Every structure is written in C-alpha cells, then in structure tokens.
Amino acid sequence: MAEPMTFARMVRDIVRRHGGLPTRLLQVLRDVQDRLTWLSPDALDQVAEELGLSPDKVRGVAEFYSFLYTNPRGSYDILFSDNITDRMLGNRELLHYLCERLGIEIGETRADGVVSVGVTSCTGMCDQGPAALVNGYTLTRLDRPRLDRIVELLNSRTALEQWPREFFEVTSNIRHADVLLGRHFADGAALRAALRRGPGAMLDELVKSGLRGQGGAGYRSAAKWIACRNAPGEVKYVVCNADEGEPGTFKDRVLMQDFADLVFEGMTLCGRVIGARQGFVYLRGEYRYLLDALRATLQRRREVGLLGEAILGDTSFNFDIDIHLGAGAYVCGEESALIESLEGKHGVPRIRPPFPTTHGYLNRPTVVNNVETFAAAAKIAVEGGDWFASRGTAESKGTKLLSLSGDCERPGIYEYPFGVTVQRVLEDCGARDTQGIQMAGPAGHMISAQQFGRRICFEDLATGGSFMVFNRSRDILDGIRNFTQFFVHESCGFCTPCRVGTSLMRDLVAKVHTGHGTRFDLEEMRKLGRIMQVACHCGLGQTAPNPVLDSLDEFPEAYERRLRSTAYEPAFDLNAALEEARQLTGRRDPGAYLNEQDLLLRAMP
Image (cartoon, helix red, strand yellow):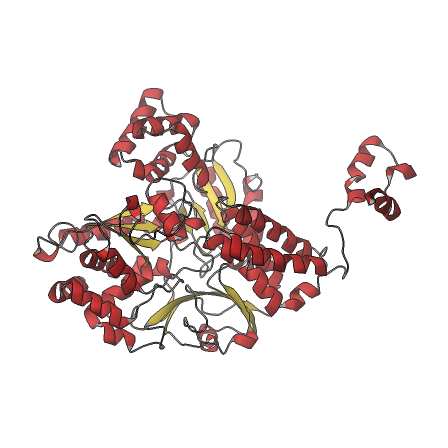
C-alpha cells in the first residue's frame, strides 16, 4: 500500500480528475481500485471525504457491484465466465486446471497475493469462449496451452501490456448482414440530414419508420423521443444503454466495437431532436477492453466537428458524450437502475411512473435507448422512415440483430428483417439436431423444436437479441440450473419476492436436478413462478422464473426422468445429517438412529 500522504494525494487526484462530482462515485471507485487492487476501509473513507459523501453511502455502493472488492484480491484478478455456453465449451475443466496449476482453490487469493481466481456470470463472449477476465480485460478462446502460458506470466509477474495480444483478441463474427451491418454509412450523414430537415421533420421520419426499442421491451422510439422533447425543462439528457448483461447476448458489443460512429451519431441525433446537450454511454463493465478505443472515437468526432460545440458549424447544435463504465451489476440493464448507477448510487430500479422521459437522470427529462436502437435511428435519418419501414412485418419494422451461440457451427452475429423464422436462423448458423433454444437470455423464453416455425417479431416471438442453442445431447436442466443460479446472484435484494423467490427457485431446481425431487416440487415451482411474475418490483424478478416455467411446459420429460418419487419426499434427510455427530461421539447403538416410524410419531401433535 502507498504511504499515507501519497495515498491521500492519489485518491484526491482521481476525484479531481472526475470533477469532484458525486455522480462519478462508481468511476472514482473503479479508478481507486485499479491503483490498489481493492477498496480498503481507508480508501473508502478517503473517497467519501473528497466527494463530501457519507462513508456509509460510499461503502454501500462499493459492496453493491460485483467488480468492486472490499476485501484484498491478488494483483492479477482472474474471473472465469460461467455462462451455460462457456460450460458447454468446457470452462469448468479449465477452471479447475488453472487453479491446480496455481495451487489455489476457486474463489481464493494465493498466499503470495499475486493472483485471485473466481467466476463471473457471463463476459459477453459466448461466440468465442471459454472466456475470462483478467483485471477486467477480456481473455478469449481459453485452452490448456493458453492457460499454461498464463501461469508462466502470472508467476513471473509480467505486466498485462506484455501478455500476448492474441490472448485478448475479440472477433466480431458477423455472419449475416442487412441494412444495419451491411450498408455503408458516412460519418456525419445523419446529422447533416437532421440539420437539413429540422427536429420536427426528423421526428416525423422516426414515426414513419416504426422503429421500436431493440433492447427487448419494444417501446415505440418516436413516442419516447417526443415525450422527452415535450417534457418541461431546459436541461435534458440522452443515455445509451450499453449494459447488455443478459447471458448469451453480445450484439451490442459488436456494434460498439465495429460501428461506434453509427451509435454515437444516433445519440447526437437524439440530442438534436429533443434539445439535449449531454449524453452518456453506460458501458457494460465486461466490455472494458473497448473503453480506450471508444474514447478515441469520441475525441476524433470532436476534432472533426461531429461532437462538442457548434456541431457542423451550427452554433445552436451543442452535444457531447461521456462514457460511464459499469461494474458487474446485471440489474443496471433496467433503465431506471441504470440511471441510479449513473448518479453514483446503487443500481436499484425506481418505482414508475414517473418515467425517465420526464424524470430521468438527475430528475431531468431523459431518453434511454439501447445501442441497436440508436444505430438504427442514425440510418433512418439518412435513408428516411419509409425506407426502414419497408422491411419487417406490420408491427415490427426494420431488422433485428441476433447473437447466436451454443450448439451451432457458426456462432456470431446475424441480422435479419423482422419476421424471419427460427428455422431459417438455425439453418444459417449450422445448428444440427436442435432440442431447444433459450431466446433473449435467461430472462427470455425457452422454446422446443415444435416452435421452430415461428417468426422473430413483436407479434410472435419477441427477443432482445440472442439465441442459445441446445442440441439433443444436452441436458436442458443443466442450463436451467445455471440460469436460476444467475438470478440469485444478480437480484439486487430490494424486494422480498425476488430476493427470496430466486433462491427458492434455485433450490427447487437443484433438488430435482440432483434426483431428489417429486411432483410436489414441480408444482411448487409453478406456484412460486406465478407469484414472482406478479409480485416482484422490477423486470428482473418478474422474468427470473421464465426459463423454469417454460421448460416445465416445453421439456416436461427433462424433469420427469429425474423425479425420485411421485409422492412427497422431504428435501432434508435428518437421519443422514446426524451421521457426523455419530462419528464424533462414536455412538452406534439403536438409539443413535432415527427410523421412519420415529419421525412420524415425533411429527404428530
């Protein structure tokens, strides 16, 4: 640890670099942790003093986010991606291999303080796993030879900058392009079109386009922009939700990596239309590797007059964008939780209404759209609303980006007009003998082969943009168990139905998965799922039971074949639990054992 004065100066410098703004608390904590490897009590107190916040608030925020540590970690912090697709690619075997080579257990820091190894839900690299993070930077395509080399680098304390570049290579894997990924776009074209048309006419084009939010909810984008534009107040904001934390979804990662100008142009366009001067990109913490390149792109756009003051020479057109890096909280994908995080707080969803279009960031009117939506808006500005609406279906205009992973020959990004069938997508990605698909991540829906003729659109099968493919060699319950564990970890704990319900659902699935379940447990899952769908505070808890409920309907045989009994059976075996006590006391007499008759008699009133 640095000397006290140096330590205090270091924290002060970081806080000053962030303007001394409490809203930058999460970014300040990330930077302090980068310097110290963890957030000690002294560090948190120093941050609180410099920002003028209570130590309890700073500590509470630090403890909320998965990628912030309030306990010591190694100088190299490795987190294996533990999404179901990583498991299908053998991540668990590699994780144990690495720990064995390093001489530590999963979740531990080595005694010399050099390295920690743990797991995280998903790194958004499902098309090039098994993947991991080291100090927040992405490692892809892990195998034993690559891990052997990593062990050498760790033991020699080699700086990350000197690790082989190919270890960090992230490919885009664009397999099928349409109007968004395959059509040329000249930087500034959307902004010139907006200046030529004017904000009102630009909104008319957005209305004609029929563009809907591409994050999954499908709210009409024009309606959101109009509501914000008409909201009272001179100060308004634009927020790009790039926190795609849904396991199996990685399309926004590719857009930010290869089409950042298009996304930034869409945000700037929105700023012009609604009258905002400031925008934020809330970038998923797992995509930290993109941060420097995105900041360079923003700076280049400022230098050529596409961002900042007097954009394209129009002194009335002022708009800039800042990037806010997340820290491992899935719930921040929900727009109001994301806004809370932007304000330097826990990422807990707000009670709505009011909605962000009137009471968003700092209680000001705010448009929150996802990455794909802003990219599409920029294209619409150039090509026109009718052009965009000419593709797709009656209620779902334009195209949809899909992230394909799992059991298919060609995982990656596919763009189709809305209305494409599931079967067509499976054929294009080389899926064979497919048993089922988890659509839109764990919060989406699981479908079986009987539904592969359905169409991808809001009128039929809506999706935020992912397919996780399971062939017939897979045990569906492996995936379901992984999803339920994911929701337990990601529940923010704000409301009881979610906090308790996710844990109960995980335990019930685990009970069946391990061969101890009964039909009673299956019915309990259904009851619990229905309660969560109506009683949870936000979409996380309301959608958490989806994979269980869907799989009970679509794949009943996956549950039936594991049932130990068709009658009630207690989950806890008291007699077996007493075995350790018998061993410790050396008792083997009949009185040291319980039999079923004893248990029944003792249970009677």
